[in-house]
Length: 425
Image (cartoon, rainbow, N blue to C red; front, side, top):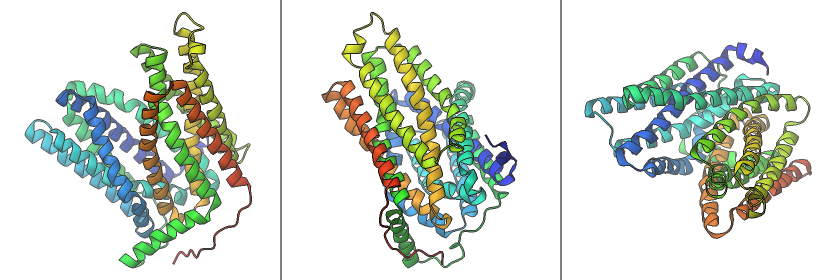
C-alpha cells in the first residue's frame, strides 16, 4: 500500500475526517438500535426507522449531485458536517432536558441525518479525485475503505461500553463532536474549485445540469456498464449476504448464535485484506478486468453455497461442523471479494467521469443502488418462503455470473457513442 498518500496533507485530512464521522455515526446507529429495543421491546422498530430514511434518498438522490457540481464542494462538505454535528447536538440537548428520547424524536433525527447525507455523499465522492492523481485513485480508495472498515469494526464495541456506563446521551455528544471535528479538519483541505461554482444558479441551470448528467451517463459505455453491474450486485448480492446466508446458517445448518457471531467477525476481519489484494492486482491488471474476474469468481463461489445448503450435502454429515466450516470458507472469500468490488466500482467511476460531473454521476449511481437493495431483499424474501433456499442461492449465482459476463462484453466490445454536448461552462 502506498503510504506516501497518507503524507499528503489533503488526503490525510479527508481520511481522518471520514474516520471520525464514520466512527461516530456507526456508534450512534448501533446504540440507537439497542435504545429502541429497550424502549419498545421491538428490534424491528428501528429497522423501520432506517427504512423510512431511504425514502428521501430515492426522491432527492438524483438531484443532490447537481448541487455538488454547481456549488463550492469544500464549503458544502464543511457546512454539511457542521450541520450534522449541530443536529445531533440539539437532540442530545432534548435528551438531557426530557431525560430520554421518544421514538418520534428518533424518527426525526434519523430522517434529518439521512437528508444531510444525501447531499454529502456526492460531494465526498467528487472531492477525492480532485485532490489525488488519477493513477493513485485505486490506492486512495483502498486506504479510504480500510480506514472506514476499522471505524465500523470498533464503533459497536466502544459504543456498547460507553452506553452501558453513561447511556445514550454520551453517544449523541460523541457523534455530534465527531461531525464537528470532521468539519473543522476539512477546512484545511485545499480543494480546487469546480468549474461551475462561480456561475449564477437558476432553476433553468439546475434542470440543464441535471439532464446533462443523465446524458453523460447514457453516453459513456463504461459508466453505463458500472451502473448496471452495481444494480445487479445490489439486487442479488446484498440479500445473499444479509438475508440468505443468515437463513442458511440458522435454519438449514442450525448453527448457534455464538457460531454465527464468530463467522460474522471473521468476515469483517477478512474484508481488511481487500485493500492490499486490490492494490497488488491493480499493478498487474487493468482495473476493469479485475472487477470482471472478481464478480465472476464470486458468482461461482455463491454457486458452491447452493450445493452446501442442499439436502444432498447436509445429509452427508452427522453434525453441522463440516457444513459450518464449508460456509465459513465461502463467506470469508465472498467478504474479501465484496471489499475489492466496493473499492473498484468507486475507482472506475472516478477515473471515467470528468470531475466537474462527478457529483451528478455518483448521485445517479447511489440512488439506483439504494432502490435495488430493498427491492432485492423483498424479492428474495418472498422466494425463500416459496422455494428451497439452495434454489434461491443458485438464482443469485446466475444473476451475478450473467451480470459479470454482460459487464465484460459491454466494456470490451466497440459501441457507438451517443453524441452529446458537455461543457464546463
